[in-house]
Image 1 (tube, rainbow, N blue to C red):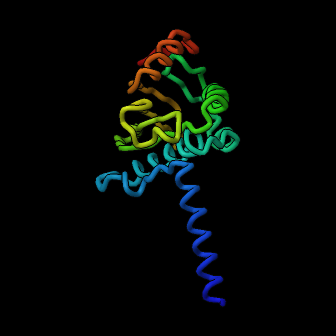
Image 2 (cartoon, helix red, strand yellow):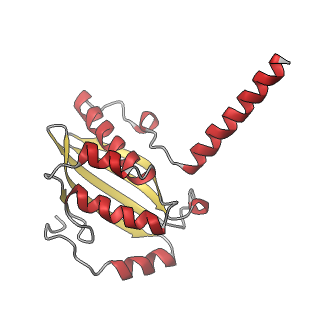
Image 3 (cartoon, rainbow, N blue to C red):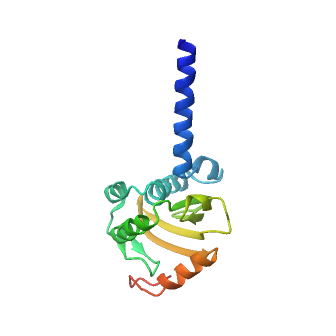
Length: 180
């Protein structure tokens, strides 16, 4: 009886863990890190991974504001408001409309104080893993003294609906930092 009860508990627990992992994408830094990174480059990648995981996948905006709300954050995506507060404000509204928005990191590159993520972002769960849906995104962050201080991105819409969304949202300039 005890053996059956333990087996049942383990089955339920593994099902819950599997279901949760399907709902929230996890940035898998251990499998994406490179052997040639210095200790500082690894620390920079860990910093950005934590930021991205909580911001883009967990949608834990309170955590992001508590740990990363630094006035030095310069946003170079002209469609997003400046600073971490602007980014969080935009994403809070965005995930209200698209609660299943997820950011699947495919590659991480680090060069000194620059961390680059190459990712597949999707709006719907059923589109995850389908490279004909969503957006191909390359994000670059600059780190200074253990803080994320600057961000650039390049976004490619992969399907018709994302191209239309990009056209509609692409005209509003929300900061004056320039793209470079």
